[in-house]
Length: 107
Image (cartoon, rainbow, N blue to C red; front, top):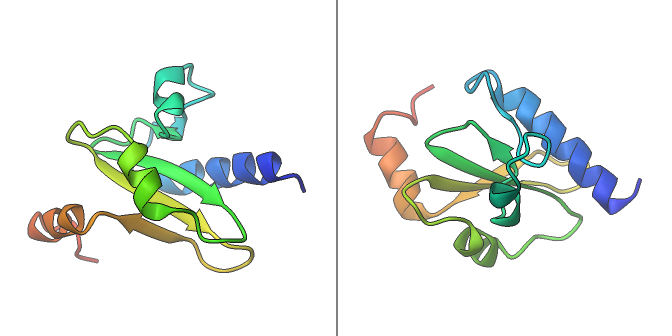
């Protein structure tokens, strides 16, 4: 499967999974939100989070990608899938602490 198709499939899968928490979650390119897509935000209607999805064999440049996403009060999260391995969520440690303090870290 081509890299672009793998990426689109992964975005669609993540949007579907995130609808458990964000019922209106959709891909930004399909929702006509090109500004968000150009700002490295792949999934919309997930306030207070912005999500970037990467399905790559190698580890992406986490710090660079997170810093390129909008810095406007949202919590930026990079979702990364490597082959058949589990998907990981990467975010800034300060944002992680904020989630823990707000009780969003409870199961």
